[in-house]
Image (cartoon, rainbow, N blue to C red):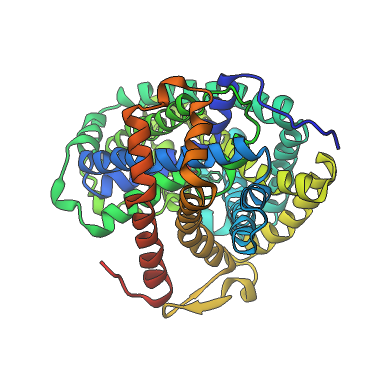
Length: 472
Ligand code: PHE
C-alpha cells in the first residue's frame, strides 16, 4: 500500500462527490412525498431549518474529523481518542452502519436498474401493471441485474479517489442536474400540473406536529449522508488547505435544492395524472411511489406523446434516480473499503473484493427476504409484527442507528477531541471563520441542543419501532 493518502484533486471534485453521496433516492422521491403529506410549504420550512441549523454543524464536525485524522472512521475515532475502547466501539459502529445500509440500498438500486432496463427495452406497459413489482422482486432476473450494479460500483471504486469517485461524480452529477431540469420543465407543461405545484408549495401549518417534525429531522439527516461515516471518510481525502466550511455549505445547499426541485417533478406529474388526487392516499414509502405509482403515470403520457415518447420519459426518470443511487452507493461502500485499507493495510483491490463478496452475501439474503424465501421473509417479530431481513436492516440501521452515530460524532468532537481542535481545523483553511457568527453558532449548537435533539430522536425511534409506543 502506498504511504501517502489519495486526495480529491479539486474543491469542485470534492463538492460533487459529497453532493453525489447526499443526493439519492431520499431526495428525489422520499422528500417530495413527505412534503406533500405533511403540510407542503410548511414542511419545506421545517426541513430547511433542520438542514442549516442542525445538520450543517454535524456535517462540519464529520468532515473535520476525517480531515484531521486522515483516516477511515474507525481510525479517526481510535487515533483522536488515544485508542479509548469506548470510542473505538463508536468507530466500529460507523463502519458497520454504512455496510448494512449499503445492503438494503443495493437491493433498491437493483430494482431501479431492472425497471430502467425494462423501460429501455419497451416494457413500460408491463411495469405499469399493478402486480408487476411483486413478481419482479421475487424473480431470478434480479440476480443478473445485481451483478451489473455491483460491476458498475466496483468499476468506479477500483479507480480510487481521483480516477474513480471524483471522476464518476464529475460525469454523473451534471448529467443528473440536466435530466432533472429537463424532466421538470416537461412535466410543468402538462395539463393540471400547476395543481401539483400549488399543493406542494402552499403551507398548511395545521399538519405540523411532533411526529412530522421528527420525520423532517430524520429525512434531513439521512439526506445529507450523516451518521454513516461517509463525510468522515470523504473529509479524510481533503488537503489541509481545502476549505471545509464553504464546501459543506455548497453540499447542503445542492442537496436541498435537488430535493426541492424533485418536488416540482413528482407532484405536478401526480396531479396531471389525476387532478383530484387526494394526497393522503399517496403512498408513504419511496419504494411503492417509484415502483407502483409512477410507472402508471409514465405510461399515461402515451395519450399525448405516444408509447415511445412515454418510454423515453420513463427511461430518463429511472436513469435520473439510478445515477443518484449509484453515487450514493459508491460513497457508502467506500467507507468499509477505506477502513479495511487503513486498518488491515491491504490494497484497494483486496479491500474492495472482500467487501464486495460480503455485500453480495448480505444483499442476496436481503433480496430473497421480500417474498422469495419464507425464512428470510418472516425473519423476526417485534412491535407485534413479523419483519423480513430487509425490514430489520432498514429499521435498525437506517432509522435507529443513524441518529445515534450523529450523536456520538457530536459528543466526540466537543468533549473528546475538544472544541479548540475542531475550530482550529476549520479555521486552518478559512480565516474568516475565526470569530464569525457561524463559528459561535456551531460551537454553541453542537455542545448543547443538537446532541439533545439527536438523543431524543434516537430514544423515540427505539420506543416507536421496537416497543410500539410514541414518546411524543
Ligand atoms: N442521501 C442519500 C439519499 O438521499 C442517502 C444515502 C447516502 C444512502 C449514501 C445510501 C448511501 O438517498
